[in-house]
Structures are given as structure tokens and as C-alpha cells.
Image (tube, rainbow, N blue to C red):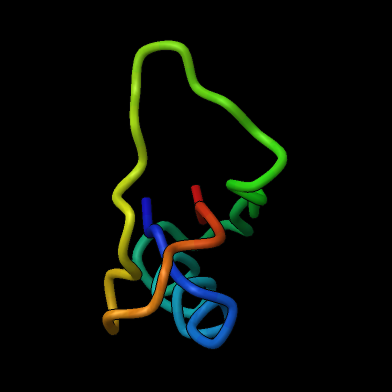
Length: 55
């Protein structure tokens, strides 16, 4: 699972495919709310705001 900004979505998808050998789902964090989990505020690759969850 990767929480990233728009700039790093492709990198996160590539990492996911390399690790799991399957296509991930990409979730827009602006349009989705989680009842039991608060996503990190910052991108895993940089200091920008996190916008997408790659799972």
C-alpha cells in the first residue's frame, strides 16, 4: 500500500506491480472516507500532500 501525491502515482504503481505482480487499485483520497483508518497527510516519496492510495 502506498499513499502518494499526484506526481508519484506512477512510481507507486510500478513498485506495487514489482512487489505483488498484479495491478493495483488507485483510490482518490479526496473522494473516499475510511471509518477505521486515517491516511497519512504527506506523500510517501516527498513532502507534498497525499492524494492517492495505491493498493
